[in-house]
Structures are given as structure tokens and as C-alpha cells.
Length: 621
Image 1 (cartoon, rainbow, N blue to C red):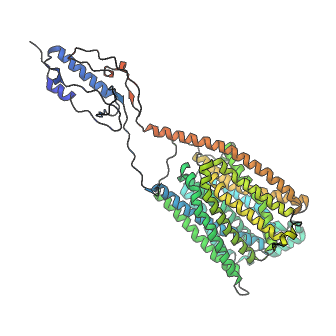
Image 2: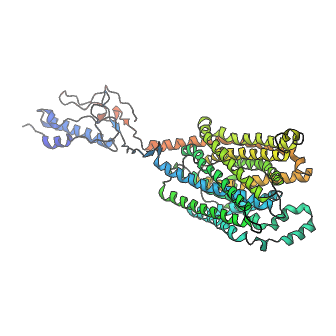
Image 3: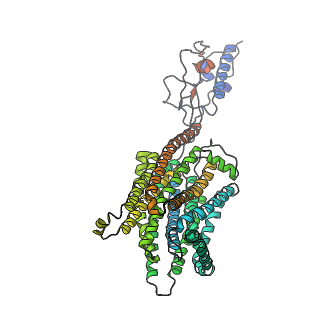
């Protein structure tokens, strides 16, 4: 008696509709139900049904996620594929073609930079007026201040900052260093300056000057007006610490290289509008002092007003920093970056010195500091001779800051085109080239100014006034190139680095190397003056030193460009690998591995071996 296999259980199981999936190109072969066997009965029918079931579950086990059937979209020959599902990413909201999450980063960063640079311009102009025009002081105090006061304090800050990076969070570190600046500048305007006559040791300084002689006029001036010198150093550190370390470190933390190339120059536009407004602010307070009656301390009134603005801007910076940390997500960095162990101060310094990348970055910063200092201090001495009155000096510096802001604004409009068209390497070489050309012009006027006196008289200028204007142009063009190209290039160079090198490298470079460059220029000037007797006699040698420094700068920029490009490509490759991990690899199964690789056995034709005519290939989505 023939044995009839139960049709319904097998048919119900095998004829179940296939499971669908997402983004899977291909399908599993259709498996006929038991009902399609016709009248086949007995042992042979049970064997065929079992073979079909085996083939079906063999396919299920080979597919790690799901089995898909895409009607009307199959290749000419049906093949088996191993697939992974890919979750589709929703379209991110955009405003004017820019992602909303990017705007939430760029706009607050631009406002922060505006406030920081507004404060820095007021502090920079005020510190020069305080120490240069103070009683018993002159422009010759600046090299001593930068070498013997500013540099040690910068080194001390770097050591403290490097130590605290291993202890405090990034947010706590930011507030720990910016709040003391805000408190000091507020205290100086309302306490230290009004009471300066009571604790400045003027009589002691006069006695020491009589004993030691005029050669020690510069160092003794630091003692004579020590609170003004402290203000000078804190204003210098505002530029090194708040701008370079705190702000740019934060910007590098929340932006990607692509965003930096596009927006660093652009949000700098808003920051350099601050130069124009802050220059007008200094000009306003200068004119206000001019209109005050006799016996009224105009500086005390001006400082209270300007320092109040500085404090208000400082608290605005803190608020913007808090808002970005609370509401803006951080970008995902490459997960393959190695986490470096926490290092002590000496280990950090050794690690930084051993890195060619950091050494090239340090060369750029030191070279800029030396180059600008070789010209700037000489220019300020000429400026003091032309404008001896504090009101006139301060008024000229206000106009100088306004012109610097306009020039920088124009340069920043061009900077994005330079980055897009010529890349990082060309942008990094523009600043040293501009500084070299303008510096040569300034020194040439100092050397050959007397023969040009008759020609200058026709334009109503003396050689001294012409040197002041040419020096001002040199500073304006050099600083505008620095703000629009040099600073963005320098900050972009930190982005591909790992977090440990980025944080400690910035502290070492921006806080120590920046004043080191300025102090190096001051030491060169002091040595030249002592050797050749005067600054005028040493001018040709200073021009030769400037040439050497700029060529070293250009060489370091070229080397850093090669390393930066390689790091960016490496990081982009790692990101591509990570993105590829969530794509759908689709691999066809070899025909020989499974009975499912070819045609299923056809019980009607008696084919139990499967077709071997089809060739399986690997395909990837």
C-alpha cells in the first residue's frame, strides 16, 4: 500500500512568504510547495520534500540577517546573496545650504571670537599707552617686559595648564582660566589704577637709577610702574591664552576639517568687525579725555569705562561657551585614534619636542613672533617720538585698530577663495611673504630717510612721520594676513591630531612659543643695541636677521603642509572605513558550497543533482 506524505504541514511551512529586507539586491530561490509534487507518493515523495526543507533551512542559516525578494529587479540568473541591512539616514535640516547643526556651532563661535577680539584690541591699545607714556618709562621698556616678565609668566601658565588638563574637565578648565582674567581687568579699572600712586615705588626706583646708571632704565621702569606692567602682561596673555588656547582649542574640538576650511575664515569676518568697533571705542574715550577739565584724571575715567566693557564681554563669552556645550553635539572623531596615557609635565614636554609635526608648528609661531617684534618695537619708539601725549598716542592707536579691522575684513573675504583654490600650503606662505616685503620697506625708510627728506617735505611729511605711517602700514598688512590666513592655517593643523597632542601641543605652542618668539625678537634687539650702540646702527643687521627668520618660516610651512595633508588623508580614510562598516556587503554564495547554489532539484524531471550551468559571482552594494 503506497505511503502518502502529509502535504499540508510541509506545504504550510515551505510555502510561507519570504521575509523582506532593506537595500538587498537579490533573492532566495523560490521553493515549491508540497502541493506542486502532483501525485508523487511514497518514500520518494518524502525524500524530495525533506531535501527541499534542507535546502530552505540551509539558505536561512547562510543569511545572517534576512532573506529578501525584490520582484522585477532580479539579475538574469537568480543568485543567493549574503546581506546586511543598512539603516537609512534622514535628511538633515539645512538653512541656506548649511546644515542646522553646523550653524549652531559657527554662529556662537563667531560671536565668541568677536567678543574676545574686541576685548583684545582694547587691552592691546591700552597696555601700550600705559607703559610707554607713563612717567619714567618709554618704548624701551617693552623688550624687557616681554623677555623678563611676559615669558616667565607664560611658561608658568603652560606648566599649570598642562598639569590641570589631567585633572579637570574641558569645561572646568575653560572657566578656571578665563574667570581670573575677567576679575583682574575689572579690579584694575576700579582699584589698581586709582590707587597706583600709593604703591608704585617711585622714590626707590629713582635711588636705584642714580646708583646703577641709565643702562638699567628699562628694568627699573618695570619696578617703578609694576601694576601697569602686570596689566601689560595680562593683556598679552589674553591673546595667548584666551584666543589661542581656550577659544581655538574649543573651536577645534567641535568642528571638523571640512567645516574649518569653509567657516574659520568666514566667522573671522565677524571677529574682525570687532577691530573696527573697538578702535572706534578707544577713539571715543581718547576724545573724551581731551575734553575733560584740568585736574581731572582722564585715564581713570576712561579705564573704568573700557574695563567695564571688557568685563561685560567676558561674561558674554562664558555664556556662549556654556550654550554651545549644552545644545550642540560634538562631531564624531575617528574611533581608531589611539588614546594616549596621561603624562606628567616633563613627559609632555619631551613628547612634544620629539614630534616633527609640533616642532614645525612651533617654528611657525616663533618665527612670526620674532619677525613682527623686530619691526613693531622699532615702530613704537618712532610713534612715541611723533605722538608724545597719551591722548594723541591713544587716538592714533584707535585709528590703527580700525584700519587693521578693515584690512583684515577684506583679507578674510579673499581667504576662503585662497583655501579653496590653492589649499593650505599656499595660504600658510602668504603671511611670511607679506611680512618680509613690508618689513624691508620699513627698514629701508629708516636707513635712507634723510636723503628722502626734501621729497617727503613736498607731501607735508617729515622722515619721522613717514616712518610712522609706513610702519603702521607694515603692521596693518602683517596683522591682517595673520588674522585671516596664518591663524586659520595654524588652527586647522591641530584638528587631525589626537586629543592629547592637540591639548598639550596648543598649550606649549600658543602659550610658550608665542611669547618666546616675541622675547626672542626683543633679545636680538637688546644684543644689537648693546653691540652697535643704537637701534639705527643695527638696522641693516636686523634686516638680515629678518630675512633668515622668514626663510626658516617658509621651510617649516612647506614641511608642515606635507604632514598635514598626509594626516588629513589618513583620517578621511579611517572615516571611510567606518562608514563602510555600516554599508551592505552583498556576497553571492559559491555554487559548489550548497545545493542552493544552483537550481533546486526538480522532482518532476527527476533532477536531484541540481543544475551546474550557472556560475555564482560576488557582488557588493
